Image 1 (cartoon, helix red, strand yellow):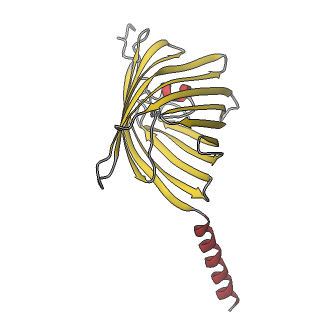
Image 2 (cartoon, one colour; image 1 turned 90 degrees about the horizontal axis):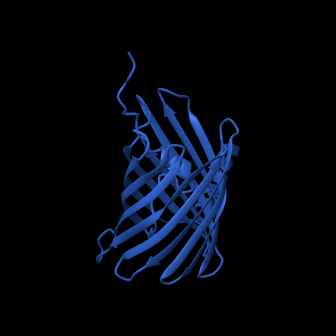
Length: 259
């Protein structure tokens, strides 16, 4: 009898948790990226897949969880890279939202040990139709204790015909080096009648890091689910230009001069 009562209490507890939030939407996505390195034979390209879910805890607080996955071209042999992101957002007013986030990046390959980098930070968004601006600051730390400081800003314009445009700048200082991305983005939300909406994106950015200046090009397709309406530039890692740039670095293709 005691076990039955304990099981009933457990079921009631989970039922209460389920009623505490509502799943409001989510997304699935596909992204192609190409990196053109000017000063070294390290140009590369890659594809990434993503998925996420959005939850609401009352009218003002929401939680988003997303996972991006790819096989970076810099890995010789089998390998994979993933970014798990969680962000809680509080809607201060109709125009202002504040959020906190945690991102966990891990990569495994046959030529090096597992890399793990965790970022924590805060993000703020202000929106006065048709304009919006989003900014973040973050602190990163890898598995051996090396830290980094990152920040970024995105200023956007959304039109009634489904198009949106934005300018973005992201910077990360790590181990005395600076990773930087700045560029332009264009998106288009296809949504007619009851058909499932599709969000198409394209962006081009200058990306600077250890191998000098290079060009990074993104194409993406996102299928929003439920009430989700994504907009803005798509990145493999939203808050780390270091990770995002290196995720597209290719193998060294220079000819061997060894005897």
